[in-house]
Length: 252
Image 1: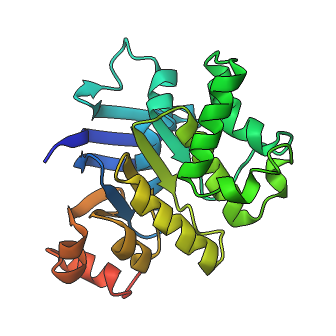
Image 2 (image 1 turned 180 degrees about the vertical axis):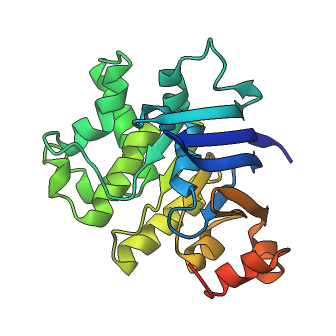
Image 3 (image 1 turned 90 degrees about the horizontal axis):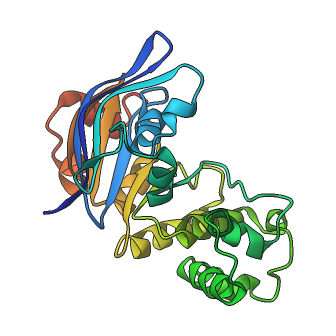
């Protein structure tokens, strides 16, 4: 098995509060890895460390190593902007740029990299919207505000925006928690499809969702990685009593 990301002795703080403690984890390539655990256990902080967003938080500090394709993203000579392009992020609440059209939302990241060739932009925007099964729904409304779409469409637009810059990894922080069941199901189907090409890490508080969409699952508790394994093993035969209590709903 080849690993896209290897996390070694990762610790993270908000000022004096330590929120991640000695995390070791290997994230397989072209698979979906779910991060589960109760609120406040460090799930979001963990994925924000994987694309160097945690250090942008007030008081955010990180130690340890995160290897992407074998290279430490926290090495002194690494540009965090390039890391954030390789490791895209989709947030809990759909956040299309409200003053931008559907087209410009998808093209925004490309333009920031200096791509201004209209035909190339057209091609990538269409490809990205097709990847998220949104093209047929919006192809005649590309000039409309991204904020005019439904919640589920907005979230798929945000995923298309992340895909447009051709990342290698996509981080998703509870991407369906603000959506209705139908829109959530579409996002889950999309995650499964995208995992054929991308490495995906999804934070979710929904045990059924983790069981449905992920190949591997990591269980965090109070900033520590309690267990990491194939999803089937975690849910059917957890190694620790704490994991079993969490996935069966005894606490959370």
